[in-house]
Length: 135
Image (tube, rainbow, N blue to C red; front, side, top):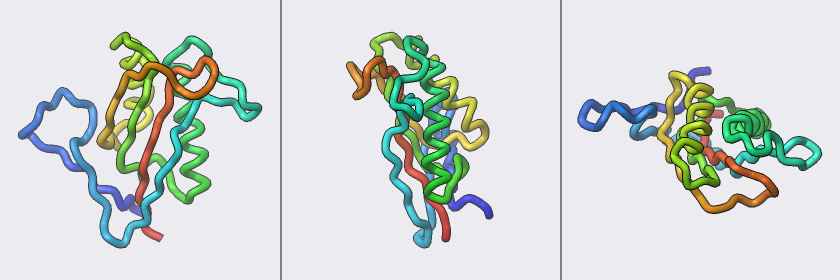
């Protein structure tokens, strides 16, 4: 089934951004608001301690599981917010590159933010998402 999400690109804004500037879903779409995907193993331990990219990859894996449980996939995501516990731009970029590469051509509107701390021991990355599907 084709995605309900339409990504909006424009040449009136910088092409430096590696994502769409906006996205829409039709009125008949069901929106799915996902909790922030954390880099937690099934036993509750934090994966990839000290490694921003590794934690981002586990966040994506966990996001994909939550999407599947809600009847959707990454191509149904309409926006993301990537939270990175760091004041170093290079750490944010390390996490972002995993997200960017995973989403590929489906480069949804995204916000990348450095934050002071996240909720779990040794947690460095969390990824929030909203998806839209037609039933």
